[in-house]
Image (cartoon, rainbow, N blue to C red):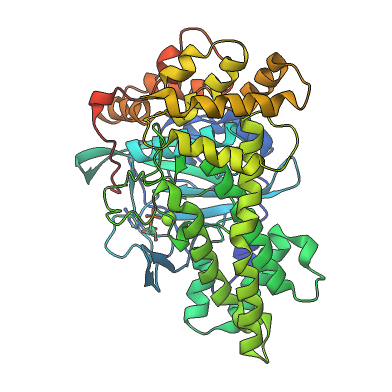
Length: 493
Ligand code: AMP
Ligand code: MG
């Protein structure tokens, strides 16, 4: 039975962007069942959650039944994957179902990920399985709770199929919500084909959708490059501040909107280590924790290349000069945002000379000390409340860190705010609960093996409220036991 609810679709991509997609349908699956439904997000989208969280809703979320007004399609894109260019990617296992205007008047895509093969599946089966679907649900919602721009999860639905991955695994579909699915790779697809008019159409669409303030700029395509640079600098600064490692920052996984997208082999660092890599296929450390700002700039350079013809159609050299000058600003723009993130994490309400050095010195003191990156900032606040012992315990040897602590405290006294108040403010921005890799793995394992979703639901609940200490959750604060060995994520999604 189709959904009785009418979803107020307003599908601009389907209507305005012919040639940028292929109209397509989901594969039929035997037995859709919703594992998790995001009622808060449904409300934000102006949808009737009760009606969607139902048997009919499950048929929709699994791709069996399209609601009235949907115009399902697979988007085309290209992308640099681990540095090598693939001219033909596209939604190989996803369908953009349509767009809705949310309660804040923002246009949002509703996409099904894992809904079957499309013309862009290459050798893939078009499917997704429970583990990775729940990982994307968990991490995406955790990022949202940490105020980090991200695509969201509206639902996770099993399909009743068994899919070949590591042996057979239960099939599932993620219903993903994004402020758009425009990627750097979408631009690359048309630029690689030297289709300047299509690149222009795409850029105009992106500006209208995400950067309306640029519509009347003198050189709106150069401004688009700069605006996306700023969004990505902000985003990566936030990732770095919480120890997030995306794991597969290919250009097809970088959005024009500035939202984090595609949670595959992602992870959070526990012990601070700039060269931390978790993905089994990232052998060179290209997407290591500390390399993410560089890679963002590299990806933005690929974006800039797609816009050259638009930036100055008559003078290529001039266009390249303008784009290069803009790109060269990235490290400083990034550093400013990173500084802003880090400043509040250590309780600095204002900026003074030497503050940036103070933050860098903190990281130097942490290096090689097996310090848990998340706990450190909570324990710094505890130190302001008089408990330095638990802070020191984070270090293998705290001797090198002690002078930093004194320097920091001296700096804080300049603001004449009492330490207790500073500590309270710090706790509001430094999470106590992050998606600990071992906790995520535990939850996904039993979900996939035994259809036991209780640990997933519990973890999701913990992560929805990351800052406030709650009773009985001590376990969720801790890094993986050291004897767990290194954490490795696999791209088998
Ligand atoms: P990702 O690594 O998830 O960002 O995906 C990279 C590309 O591979 C995209 O074009 C996906 O649509 C495609 N892809 C990933 N997994 C599958 C699959 N199981 N079947 C078909 N295409 C896939
Ligand atoms: Mg992707």
